[in-house]
Length: 316
Ligand code: RIB
Ligand code: CA
Image (cartoon, rainbow, N blue to C red):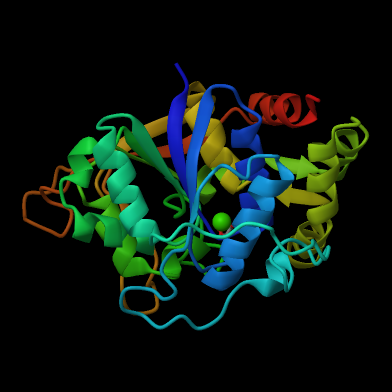
């Protein structure tokens, strides 16, 4: 039986790469996209989500417009220097034909999950505001999701916005802390693993040469993202952030995980840092005490993940 998922997304080049992986995988039924700010502002995220389902020939998949600002901290900027002004590598895609549904992202999540208890996996690959709002709307959501697979955070490596924080978490640290402590089955697919998997120039050239229109589209939109990696990290390739979350949904055995409560620093110079308590053996009470354990991915079989991605994206 396929896994039903909702992807909460800020497309975003690697978001597009993740969404197309989901759409090319028979083990996954994509029941909706919900949108959020991050790589772009939310209105453009919604337009891009519509563009992606239309490109994939799946305009039937509902797109729900999400929150336009974090719960508490102001939204300072978006990552156009990483993803391009249009969020999809400045390739000038035509406007979408369709419209978002007349329901906010959080409401869509609540209604979809509550109508099919235990069946829906939420896969947030942007800031976690919509999930926090959905929990506030319907606290029983935590008991009714199948799983929550978060791309975000870093526990054994530095952040990618600053030494403390990863982008999706720093963009709404209060929402992230609520999501990690809500008592639902969360898996964190963070920089610990996403930095380990590199889509090299050779790998991308092979994708592009495969003759698959999806692979050619991914190659075209990802040139801007690749150049960001080269200019910033001297990397002739790209880190594999959002597709890793979908890879986890497809095959959790690609990853090695540990368990423990994760809290998020919400203020100060380390705001947005995700902190895992692996040992839980403190004698005195602290902010982790009594919080639910989540799964945190620490290692990944990158070779197998890249082979899976290539196989799915290149199939005609
Ligand atoms: O830190 C990587 C994450 O930030 C990815 O989700 C990327 O799309 C950006 O949102
Ligand atoms: Ca993203």
